[in-house]
Length: 399
Image (cartoon, rainbow, N blue to C red):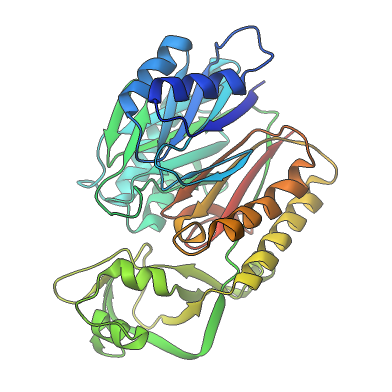
């Protein structure tokens, strides 16, 4: 039976930071020994120092993790360059497994999912939930990576976690696999504790501008070449009031894009639409998106609505509490879109948004919590795995 413990810090010295996290997470335990350490780090740490010190303090622990634009610990969010959070786990070695790929840019995303899943399954065929932390570089289309995992474990396997990024510079990102620092790779943790149950919910809280849509008239996989029979980037830049020389990040920060969800998922998701952002633009004025979009698909623009975002997380929490039905969570894994952090909200609003999630669930108790400001979120809707942008996505584990 797995036990979960968490802590976070922003101490500058990397060795001291991981030490403080382990000491605080395992306070009251006889020592710092644990069996698995999951690390989320902002981009400013010396990652090899983090791993070396963690292995020194807990020699038998496996290690997995990644970088993000910040972390969300049980004490709230932290997007400083030295933000660090961990989930320390104790339990039998046959109740979890790790897998990692050094670099995924040369792989088809479906193959990435298949390889990760096959490695996990060959180690432990009893895995019943998967934390997936792939690099944003080489992942797209992310729906194909999910399909790759499902091809090995079946469509009922819950996939959760977030996409590893840097601090929105778009330069590189890093993943942690035991003593190795991987660059632009992917890691995954499979859990096989048969006593674990889960609740998975996501919410974006954006307004969709329903009057005008863009129709994809030429595409291939996740590359959109044309909207309304014109070059996709030109149409998009004009629609957003940007010069054609603007970067894709300028477009990403201004607006999200929405595709209609099948009707059977809309009530649970609290929206008729699922959102996505632009992940790049090409020299031919095509745009890179995170999922596969077919020709004929209608795409709507969205706008940020802070009130609706707060209302959305309130509904998210309400659904989780109703599903828990009085049971106490034993661990919460959280992924928030990077654009729900400091890139769009001031510190007071960002802190309040996270508090609106954490306070009703934790109720003042010490619930292990590990969150990442990510480049995309994995979460289920209606028992199916989906890839999200602009969302708060929670994976609540209980018994």
